[in-house]
Amino acid sequence: MNVSLEKIKQNCISGILFLLPVLILLILVKKVFGYFAKFGQGIAKLTGLDQVLGENAANFIGALILFIFVYICGYLVRLAFFQRISESIDAKLKEVIPGYEKHKEIATKTLISEPKEEADLPVLIKFGEYWKPGFLVEEDSENAVVTLAKDAGNEIYIVPFQNVKILKETSLSELKSVVKSSGKGLLACK
Image (cartoon, rainbow, N blue to C red):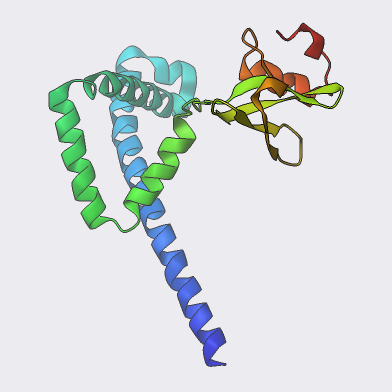
C-alpha cells in the first residue's frame, strides 16, 4: 500500500513540475497577446477596420502586430547586445521556473529542425557473387565496417575492404530512398 501511495505522490509531483512551466508560458502568452489586442483595438478604431471585420478586428490586428514584433526581435537577437540580454533573461528564467531548460530544449528541437550530419558513405558490399547496398561506417587498410540498410534495423559486418565499392556519385539520402523503394533505381547509383 505504501508503495502505491508513493508512486501516486511521485506522479503528482512530476505532473506539477511538468505543468508549471507550461502554465506560466500560457499565462505569459495570454498577457502578451492581450496587450497587443488592446493596441490592435485602437488601431482598428482609428483605421475603421472594426467596422469591416467586426469584433475580431482587434484580435486580428493584435496578432499581426505581435507577429511583426516577433519577426523584428528575431533580427535583433542576432546582434551581440540583444543576444547577451536574451541569454541573461534565459539564465534568470532557468533559476525561477522549474523545468524551464528542459521545455526550452524540447521547443527548440521542435521549432528548429537541424539537418543531421551523416558521415557514413553509401557503398555496395560484395557477398559471394552478389552486391548489397549499405553504408561504410569505418575503414582501415585491410577491413571495413559496413551496415546493410533494412527497414527493421541495421546489420553490421566487418568485411575485407576489397569487397566494398564506394558509390562516389550517390548521396546517402539517394541510397536510402532506393532501399525504401525495394531497390528501384539501384542500378543508376554510381
